Image (cartoon, rainbow, N blue to C red):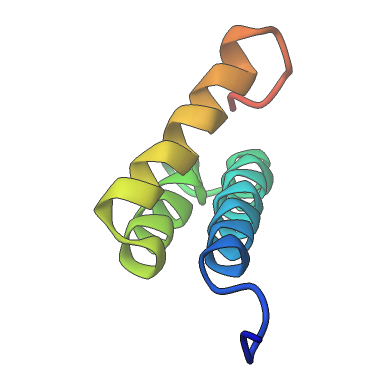
Length: 78
């Protein structure tokens, strides 16, 4: 019997969860505006945070999911 249960399946589930979580974080940060002479959002911060924590491949997948959500009509773009 295998000990530790899961293995590859557990890692895939964790990756999918993190990618979805960071897509949601990008959406939330896009809605937060910091007022100044030139107002800006935290979307750029969320993008770089996503790429740093998830890595290039998973980070880009998360960003593409965010873009896809906007393309299908959800109001996620700031």
